[in-house]
Length: 171
Image (cartoon, rainbow, N blue to C red; front, side):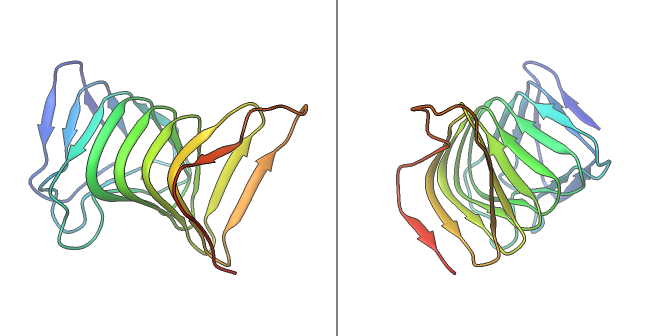
């Protein structure tokens, strides 16, 4: 587990793997190596209320990968040019992420926050929505084997998803 307290900053210089990333500090993944940072190996739920940062796109791979069965909740305001990949469990965005791309492949995306970039839900990936909660996306691409998992309740004017850019349905 890596916990970053308020005011703490870590600058990753190579690829790293952590069971959990928690706290309220700053995690700079600008130079995190070809595989970036991998979190979620414990399979448990954890929350990071700090800031993910990284403005130089990696030559290949991902800036951050979520693996394992648990839920990784982001509640802070993050900005990164790196791709974030969810390969297992769930990424819950209740804060904001200014990322150019989020890929959901074998995991799920949920939350009430804002993602400025394009969200791609690949085959086997899930986009989750709940009545009374809105997840705001910069763009959305749903592959033919992706799943839209919504829980509807009492009729409401609240949107499940608010997509400001293009929506691509592939299948």
